[in-house]
Amino acid sequence: MGSEEQRKKNPKKQKLPINPNWAQLQQKLQIHGSRPPKLSNTETQNFILGKRKERPDAESDDYQINPLTPTNDDLSITDAIAMDCEMVGVGQGNRSALGRVTLVNQWGNVLYDEFVRPVERVADFRTQISGIRPRDLRKAKDFSTAQKKVAHLIKGRILVGHALSNDLKALLLSHPKKDMRDTSEYQPFLKGRRRKALRHLAAEFLGAKIQTGEHCPIEDARAAMLLYQRNKKEWEKNLNLEMGKRKSRAKPPPKKRMDKLDTVFSCPFCNHGTSVECRIDMKNLIGEAVCGICQESFSTTITALTEPIDVYSEWIDECERVNNLEDGGA
Image (cartoon, rainbow, N blue to C red; front, side, top):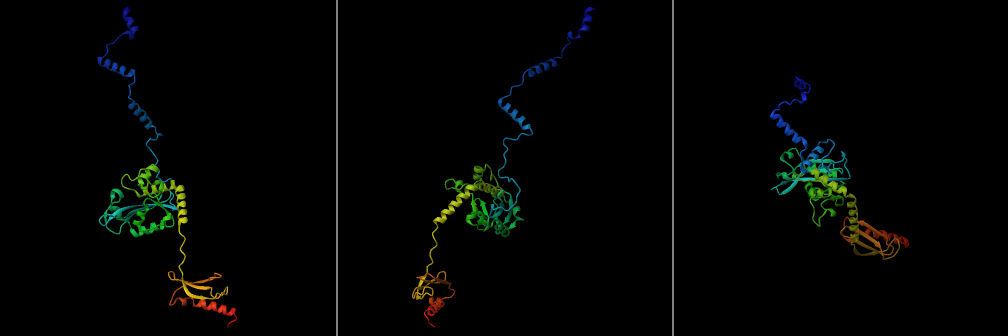
């Protein structure tokens, strides 16, 4: 009785049989729970990075702001405008014709971007480079319309671009050399005397990747403009120095070649009897009478000439009249 009462008072001391499956599971849990699993260095790094990426305020290490993205939406027609064109092949496909033209302002905002339908039939769309497809030209601007619009926008402004002569040739336009800023010709961008591709300049000086596949004229025009803007101060300084050197080296304009005529007469100003000579510029059709004493001169444009002396008849008559009056003649 006593032992039975003790068992009732101390139920914890009574051991119940344990299911072997439960015992095995409990043993496994104790083994794995006693120490955390070891992670390799790579796993640890991935685990930490994984936690970091889950933070909503954390930015990816690979994320970079594209330097070619405009910082505002100002569409003003600025003093400097960048242009880029994409070409298609006409004729046998080996001749280039304008297929798309883009203009951006100094902030990289698009002023004009149009596909252009060439006058000749397109033989090669050059899509892998130009990005132009047949559907793009179905409702494209005709060449004349695009040409006039571009000419209007660039007139009197600094024109920025890469290999601008090619683009202007495709547009059948010209632009003053002094107003062109060509990134393919700027001395600090050259490798020796070799010109660099725009994509190489963008990568080296802007940290931007362009032209990795089909070309985008908006992107290319922005790259050229940003290259100019970041080097504008030094670029303009070098340009002004070069212009000054050219002016100093420039030869003075040649003196007018005047053929001397066998006619002399008195000067009505200094009264010298045989001081006035008659000369004629047959190339520019200009006649001139000069006094060798007082340097007074007369000149006129020759519109008709039978004999050289006929041109000067009125001068001679007037000079003689003045001389006669001073001499007391009738």
